[in-house]
Image (tube, rainbow, N blue to C red; front, side):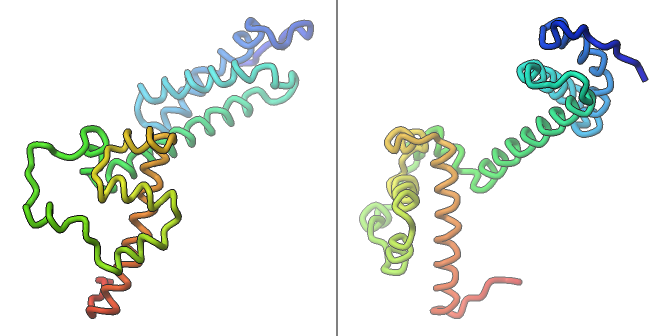
Length: 196
């Protein structure tokens, strides 16, 4: 293990002090990053992000405390945050594959809907109207705009003045609530049971 010489106490929070103290840990951080990422490019990015975060927080580091543990905690938190972000993105992208295309391009203009759907499509059965009425206003608004009017996610986000991720999150949650309520209703009224 390489021993890092202590930095002069007169300037513990300078760029030179950061470089002198943290850069010797870079190979070991890369090894840890490779174990968690299993990809050399992702590991390099993780080490770079860790060093950037450490440099930004260098003024909060207390000289004399365990620098190695501090750096590895930053690396671990960076990996966890990135993993959660990728997982959220994958969940939204795979929940309903057509949603990603609809969010970008809106309804398919080359496809003509059935005439009966065009004429009677706006009429919802009482059960669906009741289930929509039970949703909170911010969720109901998003469902009506996206699923009933066919608006793009970006247009909904602009109209509601919220990020597109918020629109997707509200739509996901509202669909789950509606699915649960309407499935329960169908099972009760029509004798349909979900497969175990």
